[in-house]
Image 1 (cartoon, helix red, strand yellow):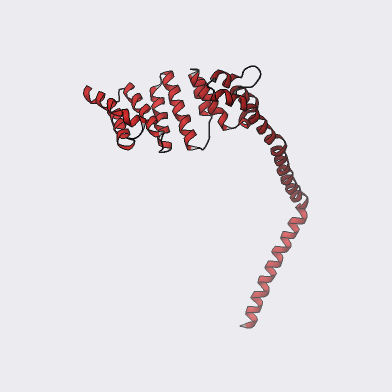
Image 2 (tube, rainbow, N blue to C red):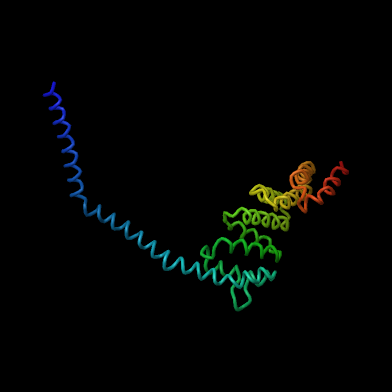
Length: 226
């Protein structure tokens, strides 16, 4: 029995040695290609790192610096200058054209709101669609602004979808306002029952909001017409 076990162990060791030998042979035959791939991967990684460090990051910083005057104009309510600049400084549209995504996600939101405020509704939608920020408040704001733009275009179905999206992103102080917009659009679409349901939702869930204080008149109007 001991001899049989010894033979099995020797056979197993021989198989292992053969496998190792084949692996070493394969490596020796292809080591130039193997190291070429490794060096290529390392070189590519270094190129990407250098590009990010010496091109992408400086461009992003430059784009942010260029946006400061546009942000100041935006806060002052000068949406035309904020969007297109004043001849001396760049507006959001120009920053986006020059720097693209390096301008940052917020640039698209700013530009979209500026276009909305200047009644360029199609352009507003185009910019707002490109905003991909993760902040819940800003994402809801972007959806609501897109809804406003669709209302300006007369596309009430698309507007309703955006207002409902805005209301569903987060439950906060702004939600009642988005719901009110959705309900008003429902009335425009002839969806009185849905509008009434949303108005009552505002009354029940957000009675302390500005919209909640005023919502009874909307409810009364629909109920009186039934």
